[in-house]
Image (cartoon, rainbow, N blue to C red; front, side, top):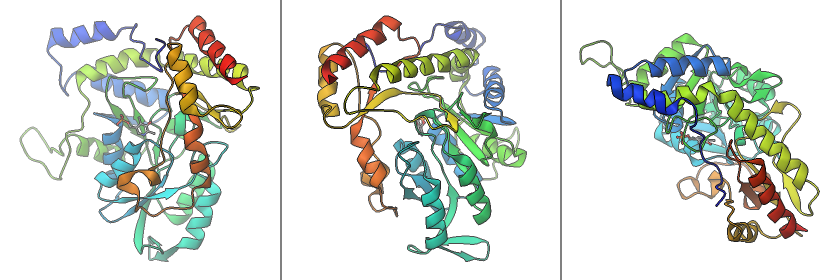
Length: 380
Ligand SMILES: *Cc1c(COP(=O)(O)O)cnc(C)c1O
């Protein structure tokens, strides 16, 4: 079976894990955690990074640090993994769901401008969402598939309205936007995930990255039970969200090879794109001119005369090849059916057409050729 995407752990992962066992540092203390944070900050161009237990927990503490409070609304593209919406709910707030652009599958800046203009009013410094009467507390763009959203117009709107921006850059380590790495795009904070299905993994884990030292200190404090010193004194309701040394050991070994892992993902995407582009009914994953995505997943979109994604998936499975559907938008998910939202023509036309294809960073050229051969036969 050629799997969809599995991690490549052939570097220093085992050696660093052995070190943790040998020196006894298996929990949140230990040298790998700060080392990992430094590597993540350097790779993303951010001043600082705080390692967390997951990407979801990173989003949660980042939202709290940015001042999101119960009852607030947070602007979120509907086309994302449910963790982005869940983190908003964990903060006691509600996602205000937006459609995406067909060119990028990320938050649509024009739609954002229009809704902020027509559906909000100022109340002192607050921005009130008129249809619900609730406070808009932040904007959470998602870098879908590791492709940065069109951040310059989004950030200029955020500044105009005084709204903080937290970027969900879960799978975007290594991506660039107008030449800049994801820690240099201007968001107040950003989040990276190191879950096992991401290009660079620590098994489970995440990181908040940012430049504002006061905000980053608060993120660190909240994610480590808000302890004020060596004694058991805590000054806030904190969280046990710190990454462990074992996870950071794997993370450090992966970060040493991050450029190569992302480079492999990009090469795999480029081969699929050039081999599949001309097949009838086949569309490619987005690659707008303003960004160089991290190509977390490869795949295609299918429209008539191509078969339904589920049918093609079955054909691939019979040939020993794993393929999968991708995200179902948040406005169609049970916990968020009642969330305020825009019209969703783009997300709704898109999501059921997507099929992801084998794209492990160590996928061999032979295996990829086999996948392409089966696809060509099924689609022509
Ligand atoms: C993976 C992912 C997350 C969640 O990260 P976890 O580490 O699994 O908690 C959040 N948002 C997006 C867009 C993701 O792809």
